[in-house]
Length: 418
Image 1 (tube, rainbow, N blue to C red):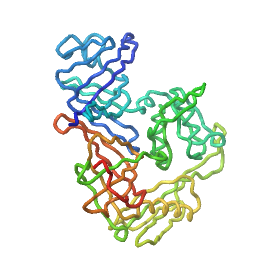
Image 2 (image 1 turned 135 degrees about the vertical axis):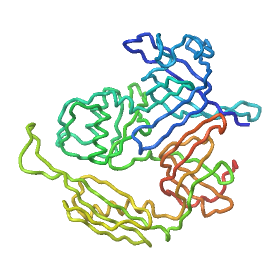
Image 3 (image 1 turned 90 degrees about the horizontal axis):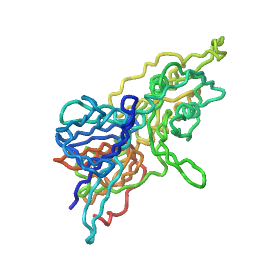
Image 4 (image 1 turned 180 degrees about the vertical axis):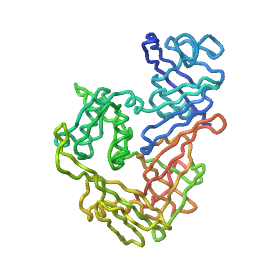
């Protein structure tokens, strides 16, 4: 029998008003929680709903029962140091405990690690939490012009997050020209990069940094750029229809029936006459646009002249995507990049989401290996695009897994564990 295990670890963070808030404690029960792991949303978030009456264990091992009915200040709504407060470090670990060969086995994983963003003042108490993006919202960016002759996007961001000891993924080196930061936080900078350049920002797998004496330190790693960078290689986990797939919103489509198209845009900086007061070359943004369609194994494309407003036909059939690139001035190269992106999604197989139990625990960038004994044509290996984690007293622990694209041929046999 699988018994759900949930533990929440809180590290209080001292403030000027409450300098002695440094306790560490844990909760072993919640009414429900919901978390997400995706590159689409800037910030992974966690919402925890505590019961009206709850207990926690403090650093001395003392169990404090039902603090809501005592003088304890739960979230800063009365006098005294609050139990929970904005900025506190929070980690949630969840999974199952079960018996195997007369031994008690605990199979858990870290669902979320981040910071408390807010605490509600009403019962049941709710904690709203964010991942490391929370810290970037507090970190001011220097008022500085980052010259394109010295900085890439990645090296600029590495300098911006250095005060926190965070790493920036350096898989690519993206040239964006001169870039000015002025009276904004690092999160404001990322939001501007998304608005003006359509760059995606998210925290992915931690980076392993040499810490001296042969030691390696794991630090948060920021990803930013025009493309999603999945961890390589991702971990592979097995899921079975008529097994650990509880329900699904998956659709099976044959390659011959798939119609894909993409509106591909490249935002290019074009030099103009003159310099700024800082001595940087004046530039303006100019868009290069193309419509690329993939059907019946063949590509067709239509290119719009640079600087002109596109007038592409509307999409009435198939799946149309919008793809953004940076500084692609050659129309043929822009079409080729769009073709490469579309080709990943031109496959026979499954698309959509499915719900499974809390184990095996997966993250975006892992690979789901799907089996089906009844309809073996549905078998295959898929990149995981996003995961939503849910727990409630009524339904237990669940993961809602969204597939991105197919990465492997049909699997040969059912897992022996099922």
